Length: 268
Image 1 (cartoon, rainbow, N blue to C red):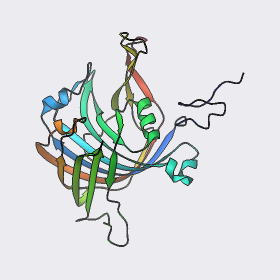
Image 2: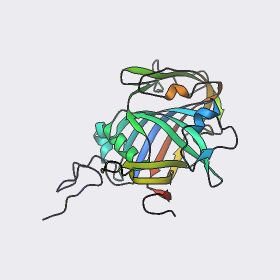
Image 3: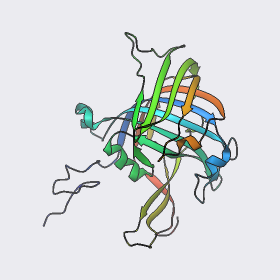
Image 4: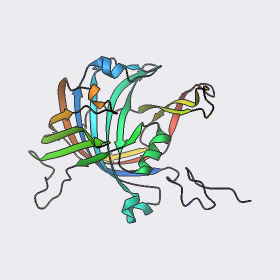
């Protein structure tokens, strides 16, 4: 009997129905980033052991909207755009592990199933949502990437709006912020199929870009609102003090990560 094939479910005789292909995964995207400070205790409650809060500015949060085109190594998905285009919004905080500072995604919503599948593999806590952001364009009424340009962004899930922002660009910037500027420290968790047996998979991993390129970053100001919802907790990261907002176009390649700790098969 021939083996079933595919990088991810569903596995079939050909592997063509697999929800996601094997890495590397390539991304082109427009990012709107809003950084602010919240109660550091609200960040701390989202950091499982052995992670600790960042030593400096432990209450810093980045809420990021991203409009992506993504593909596998050969890029064929770009010519069938429903397989390439998706949007996401995610909240990032910083933490430390063995003296090193990491970024960590604590909430994230996407609008395509293949993005959720990639998140399961990478340790991102992805859920379905409705995400929209203003797109720049050199003609007509859309904003140009220039001083004074205004971009809107919204996030909703389960028919409830969770966040909305308006970003006004001010000037070119040397960076796209600092909260999401480190390797990611994520957990890969999978409960055992046997009741009461805990986790069948319990890994702390480090991931980051295998390669990265980007256009000019712009810094500006943001009006950001978060809203309560019955099944979401983004609003617990309440806005106490704005830091800055950013716009940048980026290109990223993701090609795997590194195991930091495993509580099901020993630690490195």
